[in-house]
Image 1 (spheres, rainbow, N blue to C red):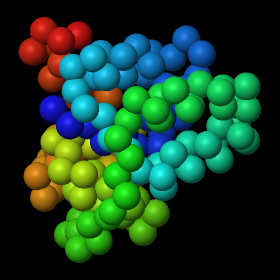
Image 2 (image 1 turned 45 degrees about the horizontal axis):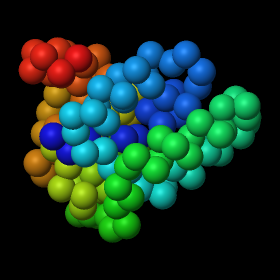
Image 3 (image 1 turned 180 degrees about the vertical axis):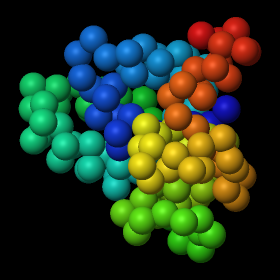
Image 4 (image 1 turned 90 degrees about the vertical axis):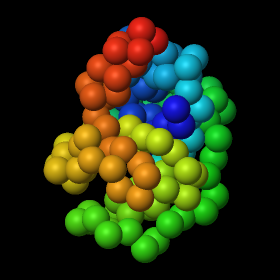
Length: 135
């Protein structure tokens, strides 16, 4: 499994006592994790504003990820422009899953596959991991 982490996943996992961090620990143990600078910078900006004391926890999470430096831009999915670099990074990184908590923009695509990438919420991914006895 190759899992691309959206900015909101990185943000949530950086918070102390986060259930997202517990989920990511399982993902890191059994999968390759990827993200891109677009997602990292968004997570950083949001942590700076909303939880600056959690900024130090972001770097170790990012270091566990492969950084995707290219983007697929020819995406046939109804997404706001701000989310194209996320899905585009997941596609360019040849990931199997895009993990996002963004229900507003990605919710209609959850459990669907776009150009080989299955878009999943944390709950969907946790269920997949549990079925494989990895969680």
